[in-house]
Image 1 (tube, rainbow, N blue to C red):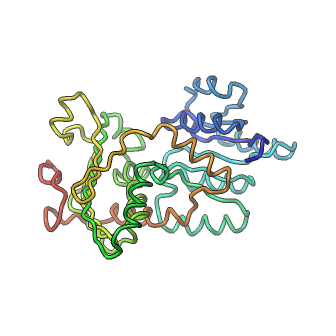
Image 2 (tube, rainbow, N blue to C red; image 1 turned 30 degrees about the vertical axis):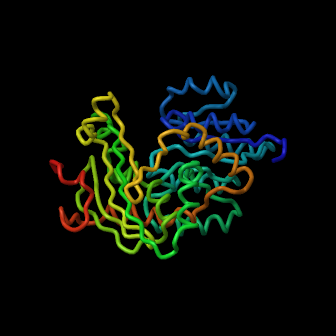
Image 3 (cartoon, rainbow, N blue to C red; image 1 turned 90 degrees about the vertical axis):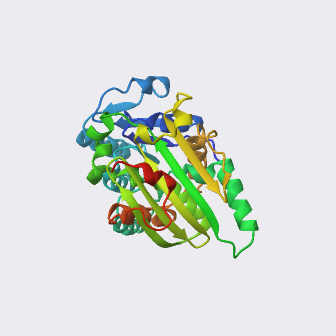
Length: 319
């Protein structure tokens, strides 16, 4: 990596995940030149880049970035931490400004959006990088090695459970709007589907058993795995023993009934992602296609109910 500082702009700087992007920009010895968010509660910037220009209006931000470019200050990367339905537009902005995009998951909501963005990549010569941090997690990398080095004809049985409790605000915000977030499977599950297809191969069957605005459960048949999965933002779905510990999140992946421990090790994965992106090793649009296809199909599926091989957590639902 050279010693020249990369210039960043950040869209969605008031959001929950933006602090990890600010930290990653700082950790990579880069500079935040400008930031945008329609909300102005962004005092956290002072801890990272107090001299960054800040805008609450997209039009003024756009004009400022264009002015900087004309004056010789090039933006190398645009970080995108905005609501899911805006990613496509903000990625296009980044590429057309001559910058690479670094976008939070899901990179887009629909498979055809990827095709259109790949055309703009060709036109501009710039890349769209997606944050797929589970691919960089030590436990997941180790699991992939084990599977790659294991019997080639083995089909693994996997249970994925992820419950991350959210309050009433969630359903009032854009996250609770299926048109804007893509629903629960897209919003909190897309990186799990990416990880599973990365390790266990292409989708052969995608079934949804139960689904509502707070939870969804189904079955994925992959080339080398049968996956029962359940995702929820409802505290009532948390197992009793976890509630008794005072915890509001439950995350579990078992492969052949063996728990994969990956609760820790998340804090610096954005910095690691940025380091790899700056080296030219970011995860591009092609890598995201399988997971975007999966969540699109889940979102548009008709649930079949408690039939076939469903996740045990589906049984106790008041849907």
